[in-house]
Image (cartoon, rainbow, N blue to C red; front, side, top):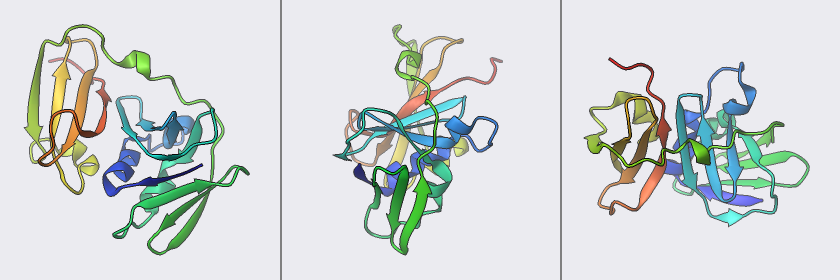
Length: 177
């Protein structure tokens, strides 16, 4: 396995769980060419290009992705088949271990009903997602389906069309006022 992450794609690791009470969610999952992270309330995913030789989920600790220092070149992540992962940043190599466990299936979490309305908010308004909005990220689209279902979101790069999202996912509402 070998793939690269842009600075924008690397930010997906902020969506992973921060505590060790849910160890699988403290990882970023590589599944079918997508990188997925979730903490139980926010789900984020992005497509990655590279060479994938495994059919199983690959769980990479989000803390190791976040501590990598990215320079002008994308972050390169490679696995050697021995449950070890090398994260190559501008300062060298961070050795990490793939984690055991089964990441949840997330495709069935996306709402399938017709959306009620959608809004676009600039990054200055929404401080809770600022960590995922790096580099050229300019705005977020939200799609609301009902007051009880997840809110779908997409983070877009500046000057790109509506179909070219850098990161997309869902956020579960905490409560309804």
